[in-house]
Length: 317
Image 1 (cartoon, helix red, strand yellow):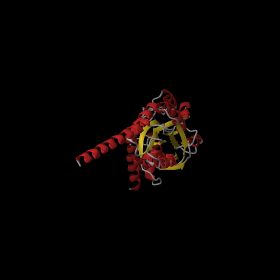
Image 2: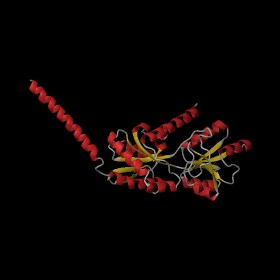
Image 3: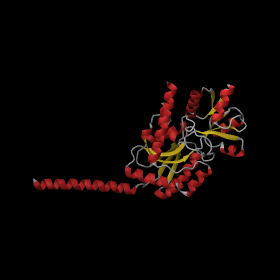
Image 4: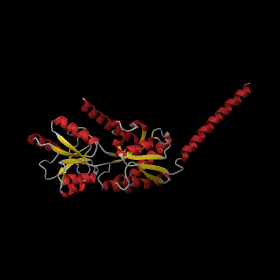
């Protein structure tokens, strides 16, 4: 009997060792096939350009081809919804924004939450700003609000989506100033609306920079809490005491990546984001930042969620 127990224990130990060895072998083989990068925007835009550019050093680092699939729409939510259902094996990534994960679930129109993903990288921060024509009787957001108070003028605001609407509603509630929001689809259309005088000011994710450089437009405030790269002297929403929203470009994966696979992916992505070719692209468009790793990205998304929950709560009270 002792001999039988010894044999049983020996076989058990051998089996466990074999299992550990097999797992280690699988980990060491990652990745052994192409990795799909699902881009939550239409092809041809700047998010597409960043995804393709970062894929070049990422391919070199991982030794596998990065393929690209486009699922544009709903601020990245269509892509995030699809990727959430994929296997958490490191072979599917999603490129979206911080609002895709930190704000869109709060609207109650998506079937995922921010905890359904493993965050790997923040590779850029868009120059999202409130802008207007330079010949208006204001130079920044505080002077715009003061003008509206003194004149009683109701100002038309060009809105790109629900997040900036909440910001404007918070400003209205805090100051007593009334704004008329007008929905505008896309940055190019927003520029035309501002240039044509159809709105008094509006939100822009970056197309405004060339008009600021030419003297036609001014930046009233950064939408987030960080100074802008192109116009660092513009006040931030947080410095003015209003809700701040940063529009960051984020790469994530389905929740539950094996720890070693996640570590491999995260290290490769951060390295790729620091690649000179990628940095040349983002710095040239004024969206370059020090790349944020997975933990930093998650903390940023948690902060945005907390801020927007507070705004939504204030609206309903």
